[in-house]
Image (cartoon, rainbow, N blue to C red; front, side, top):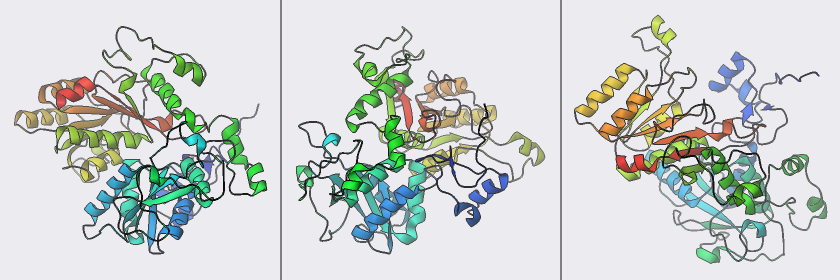
Length: 465
């Protein structure tokens, strides 16, 4: 059997012809450098990219449609999944540009499904009062700030959500509402709240979010024909009915917890009344349960929201971030500014941009831990220490046993990112108060889904607080 080789074309999806792909072909070192330096011969060929760094064309088209109807040519839109996320985005804008005020230039528009338009999206007898997407409209010349929020928080919408919601938007199945963050509404926007968000449409349409067919309007051809990508998504079970979302999330959490070890259908997984866990607890940590596993839209979101939660819990304190300097480069250029440091850059930026800042250690060495201990002995306090185990890309690891001892003694939390090894291969739960991971790397054989998770030791967090 001949094994097909990977494509050598710059900018195409990996695997080839994969909708919603999170990997892109940069087959040469030159193309990698060109991408990092923003060279057009690379960027102009890219059909997709890693979603936090590259805005998928599906998302961009939906944002442009919203601007056309609700904004102006001087604006762009950042698409987010909730009012709370949009509120944080607006706050970030105002913090970065104090002169920017909510109103015409900066506003958030929430989109809700019209009553009866998204029948399968809501539970029977209930109305979902949460938006399916929120657009933060901002001045076009401040795109860099929007991109920073998108990249560092990991809280943007997925290309799948953009695809479905854009179709519903074009079909008139979404009601737009200015959130309390925004200023005066335009004539075609409705200021509303609670159940009044839902407006019955003039033409009956039974299309539902998550059903096999998205019938838009009265176009018979459109309702009968599926494009190829939609067929593939549904044929191979990648698009589930949204009514099953809660059950699917529970099954994922049980799998991560190590409590669901057999291969079984979703119905079987969620019908198990009692998860059998050995006497040591989940993965050898006493007291942990499936309820301590949290899911996020991306691995970066799990880190961002862990940091945000700790700031609320413990107050405004600096954190510590561990990175690793290339020892080979260090030996060549000892003492110079050219040593190559490898922190996970977005974690470092989160700690710097949200909260009072952080102390960065570039070696993650015993000497660095000695310095942390001296600081603590001298009365300095910290919110948390963030590290990778192992580090990316040098695969170096800190002495987490010693760090655990210091954290217990001086009352700071330890957050461990285990993405590179992932929870199937490394066992760091006994040493961390929160262990985070990007599921994007392991939860799809087709490289076309995103997700993140955290496992939280509540006892440790309460002790730190």
